[in-house]
Amino acid sequence: MKYETIFIMARVAVHADHTNLGDIVHEIETQSKLTLSDMANVNILETEILVSKVRNIKNINHGTQPKL
Image (tube, rainbow, N blue to C red; front, side):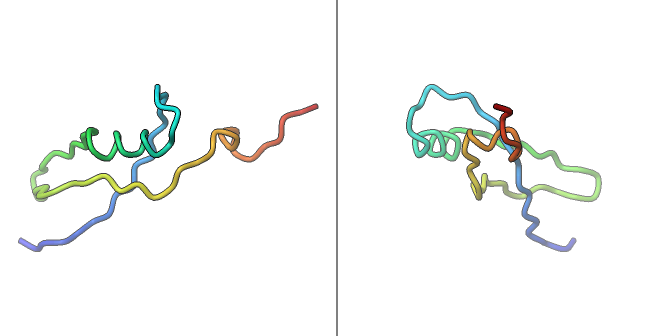
């Protein structure tokens, strides 16, 4: 069996009681669980959460400007 590392990025929208973005990210990184199951030809050996980008709430409408 061949061993490979595959990077999977997940987008997660959250509603949080934290006021500080760093606290939100820290809680997600330390307490969240990502579950991947073994398949017939693939055994999952290890997973971890990779935080690569945080989008500002102002951009939640995908860049469109509100009408005045």
